Length: 470
Image (cartoon, rainbow, N blue to C red; front, side, top):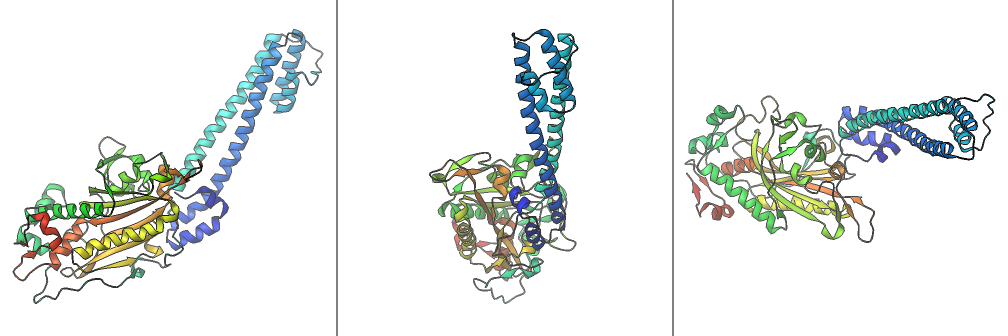
């Protein structure tokens, strides 16, 4: 979530930055946010002023009723005059009348009880108005928050400005392309031929874009997960095991809701959801906490299944296991001081790239432009592996800095050394890596003419020393 003070002070600049993201819907909300914020602040000021007046009047009322040096007639006259002043919303006059600093100027003596009852009724009306003001303020606050939740993060100044994913900037390829003496096959042919991927039974069980892994397929996936986790731990990440079901608040905190609510699977007991990524749970591990600077940075890694109901574009990524509703992923996550977060982004990306290098599969880094930056990231890199059977680059990791976008939602802060004035932390996330597409890249790069698949050297210890899948 953005800082409301930024939108309040620089609405036109915020609009210019959002325009770079190609988010027309968010642009339309900025003016509404500015208007709602102004109304909220004005209303709050009015309520606070009226509350203070009412408290003052209640104290004056108590003094008037308890003043033994004043006759009942004088008290009644003052109460009656104060009631008239309250009806005219002249709070200062009413207070002075009850405090005795102003003459009542009433010749008629009225019944004391009736006079006080009328004054109490007028004070209650004042209290009702304050209550109605709170209700109105809450309604405005809810509308303001709803609009704020739809505003994307703003791009970092270093992010190239361009319209779409077609403009993303690829870095040089790392590694060497395989030379085949035969036409390399795609994984959707290799898997069934080796009986390690079964698409038909996956569809039978759950519908389109589900699959089952069998034998070496399941073992290869498990080996990759172990390799990813061990590599992350060697890089200083603390491994965590997390719930795969979370409350809706956690998805708001991780900036998945409301923007991506239609891509998340909800459970029958409304309010809890299957995670689309372990990032959701890790981003909320320290929710509502204020950490000490000495505890930072925090580096976490977690393996989890990911559940996503997102729709694929017609004719795109519909074959094989490139884009599916359930898959395994190892997620790297960092919680850092603002001053170090961009260095942390570079190191996280390099760590993901190193995994590709250890698997000896050609890969490249993609610098993401503003038009493809997404909702939460201020800066993002994708890492792609070459897949010769599919004939395309496949995204296997996405590493992002979200700065304070998630921590403002999750109220995650820290105390800088030497002060008790808290600041929001920065969070970063990156796939380390996404398993299905890495499996695709392994199968297609390591395939042999007889249909068997060589096992990369780094994975052999996880597979009992086996060298070939056949």
